[in-house]
Length: 109
Image 1 (cartoon, rainbow, N blue to C red):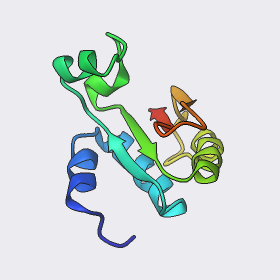
Image 2 (cartoon, helix red, strand yellow):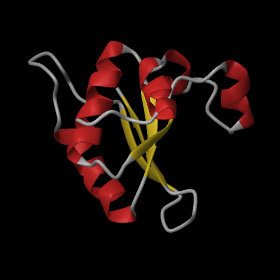
Image 3 (cartoon, rainbow, N blue to C red):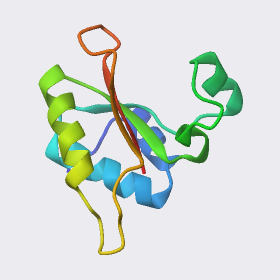
Image 4 (cartoon, rainbow, N blue to C red):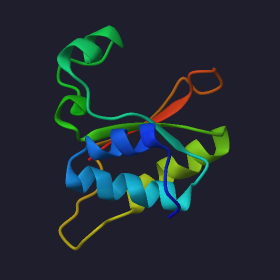
């Protein structure tokens, strides 16, 4: 995979190793996706309306933006991809705000 922009590298670095590996899988398959949110502080999570028990708080969730069709395809791929024999897959796969400027894919592992 080609080097990602600095902001994306920072987002990926804040994820757990398992979540980071999954995020990189999706980015390799769908290079038009961009990670837009990863690990969050309590303050940041509250300011964006996140759940008090959000997987983002532990670095186990990542949000992606990108073209509508890539987000839809990546959601299906997220359910199917495994990074090892013991990997059970994602906890959450949510397509949010589709057909709005804020559309994104949220995936938590």
